[in-house]
Image (tube, rainbow, N blue to C red):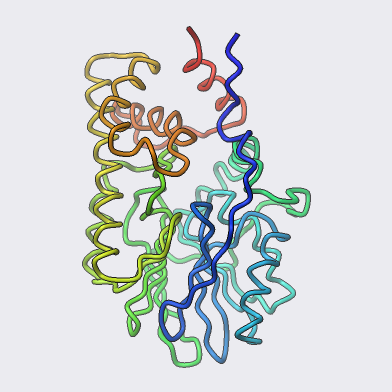
Amino acid sequence: MNTKVFASQADLEVKKTTFEQLSAHCWAYTAEGDPNTGVIITDEAVLICDTLATPLMAQSLIAEIRKVSQAPIKYVVLSHYHAVRVLGASGYKAEGMEQIIASQGTYEMIVERGEQDMKSEYERFPRLFQNFDSVPGLTWPTMVFKDEMTLYMGGLEVKVMHLGPGHTKGDTVVWVPSEQVLFSGDLVECDAACYTGDAQLEEWPATLDAISALNPQAVVPGRGPALTSPQKVAEGLAYTRDFVTTLFSSAKEAAAQGLDLKAAMALVRKNMDPKFGQVFIYEHCLPFDVTRAVDEASGIKHPRIWTAERDQEMWHALQAD
């Protein structure tokens, strides 16, 4: 009998967090490959890009911010709809939160699949949701934009932009032009696998091109260490591009051959394992990545909704002898 534990249920190792200043107003809250959060601090207000997974977890970040600023945390930006990025939003209410900002695409995904995603993500990776019972429910944006909006935080211009789909159809970045710092969400990763279970793989490289065209000097990726120089930014973009294009080209090959999921996984591994097998959450992501990549290669443009039940069906199909 196969006793391999589903997804990352057995991953219980607590990660060390780092709160690092990148420029005059921009900070990165990173956690050794766990989901990152971006922070912009001015005398007038604070902006959070991605909330952490639960209100209780948000308290750790708030404590770090309060060491350097007492300004109200007015703005929360959702880089996309995934539970691990959005369910901590209510934790900032007591700190002065006025707006939860999301793209139109992210709002649509919350409407369509937010409830299923919340249950699915928690069952896959429970360590990332400390005190899950503290989550009051889905996080709903109070402000929705289509392509781009601009905030002025004490005179600092902050652009919130949908540059194109990739990790999801609604991906949002936060850009501080005067300091050339970008908060990318999971559009860019560093030393971690790209989760592509809800991705638009065909469009993802063009969205990376749009990020590159901004010429950022620093990027806070979705996971991994902050990219703190133009060279590191270029490396992070190249790494992410390599991951998603290798995955998608392999899936197209599998789809063309009419392979079942288990055989498709073997083909993808042949191309992916030598380059990415050692990076954080690779084994966690790969089953979901291959399933979505084969779907998209087979003409399923809009990602199928993951449910806890579908997760298990996929997992068992891959574990079967």
